[in-house]
Length: 601
Image (cartoon, rainbow, N blue to C red; front, side):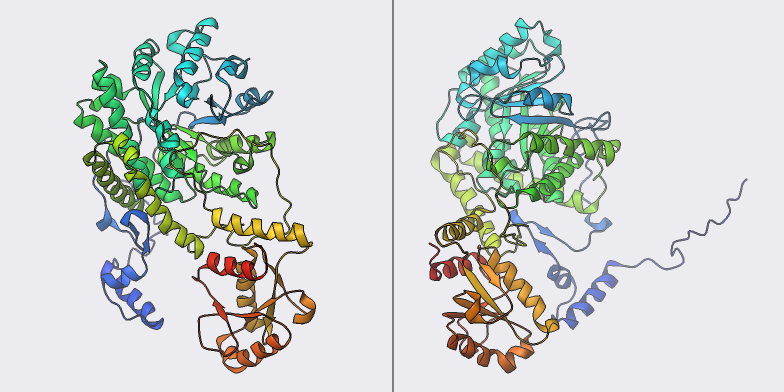
């Protein structure tokens, strides 16, 4: 018997294991120093973060938080992945979106890392008649094609199938999806579509083993402001509606289930995105099991970086957002990932933006080695618990839709619109108070940036659920500032009146400058108020300094012509101070009222 030498890595093995209760008592002591007298679970709750859908992220996860057994990758309930090997053979499918004809762009994508194409046809996209031109030079037996044609789905599908026949592509080599999504189109436009042509396409697609007929697109619900659970629940209700239609048309439950592909949004909230994709597979596996088709329970997922999170100001930051979202999509087990170019919100992306978008996946797969591990998040107590809680919240939302008559019924009654609107209203309040910061927009804006110009993109279908953006309230404020600049040659200005030494005023001066720039208001420092060109001022210093000098300073600013005097700090009662700006104040309301007074209407 060989005795291994001591390697010196005992790693504190001589110390007894710490207990959860001991950790809680330490937390209590820290909170007590900050003035909070809480104990036990309440102490832990004080450090928890509330998410949407009633979920909470706790500060510590241990084995006691272990969720139900998620199974193994490639086996029911497929939480850990739809295939035993996950994305390890070569990474996920890199799918690029094209909504307009651009010479050479499709081939350039395929030659430089893209492995499948997502073509938007018809209204808001490429004319169906130009499908052959869009795919000119593309090896259709190698590059899967996914259509997105809305009301023109039947014509687009027949055109694509005819193209396969004309180019001699063997049926077993065809890959992709015809992209039919009648309920998704209705969500976008408010216009119902007949399902009969879709059922006929599904019957015809049976001759192509690798071709799916329907896309269950959850983006309309995400883009209308829905939460992760609402996105999952609505997609599940849509999928069940399609199963009913297909089985009534003569397909078996298993045949019907294999005709569906699911599309979800991937956001820069990486853990929530990972949990969402894992929960989606678990939920679909449950539906397939109940329908008697457990063999079709491995959901095929297409993740798209969220359009809601894309900013129009400082759009370069979108590269960072999409990188985190793509990482989350890959870790979450998405089969295909589309990275929207950083200038997606501005119009048609240029060649540089498309190149960065496709290379994002390449770097994560080839250089960060994300595809070398099956289910990288598996075993994380936090991710497993979040997946479980999100799955339950989504299942409840799905059941509520079914109880109200199904997806079509809640779309037509307006109930789903109201649910999504309430969620967005709550989130908008967080955005307005900068509880959910937007880098480059609500935080660290750059007023002197040169705007990025792009050719206008085709107008997407509209008339149904709204499309929202996180930056919309701040974008409106910045537009008012731009109009003032164009009309007068200067932006609205505010004077930062700093009191005391730099050590006392720097933090609040930086806060105030950041806040007002988010509304396009230029902060002026140095010199005196009369020379600043401003009409309002904000006092910046420490609480102790305010107690000594705030009222006198406010009086001096008013004497110098300041129409309004703000103070950077918590509300108090200083004579001469009109308003207080502080962390957690409604920044949008403050900035809008300030622009009103400054004449930037």
